[in-house]
Length: 228
Image (cartoon, rainbow, N blue to C red):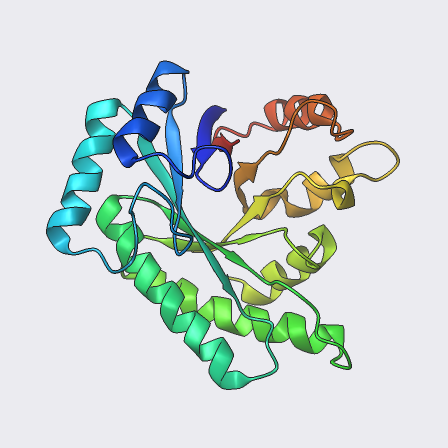
């Protein structure tokens, strides 16, 4: 397992060079750029080819791998035009990820609209993700669905089964929903066939069984990145 940093929290205001310096100095091996959130790194879908090349050069010089482009795109809306807009935005960010050499974009489900059968929303999200999986095969980038919002491990497992595509991943999000009888093993085993990235939160005082998670990931042969 390798340690990476998601630019959503503490370091979001740093310039890209400041960020990379901090990561290098503290033993991180990867970075996950959160887009569309006015972060100091300035890695966005609207930057041009030269700017994208500079991002790659900066990260290579720092010895930091770009492991993901993290979006806020989601596909649960009852408005079909809204969903399609998120799909098209995701494709643009998959293009960015491809140019940066990142293997995935992070996406969400994310909610279950009131008065809509849960199964219908799950099927809708899966349909959007299948389209993105196909698009990603042309760019060597996969859409990776995070266990986030109202989409817990059971829901994401249901989505993954419907997507049924090799170019698809799930991202573990380290929330209380994962814990069954004091352990994350049941949830982890359920999503493990698709697991390709892990997100962590505050390790101190959160009450989340991180030791259990780390032990199980190691035991089950997970060799990917874990973003703090």
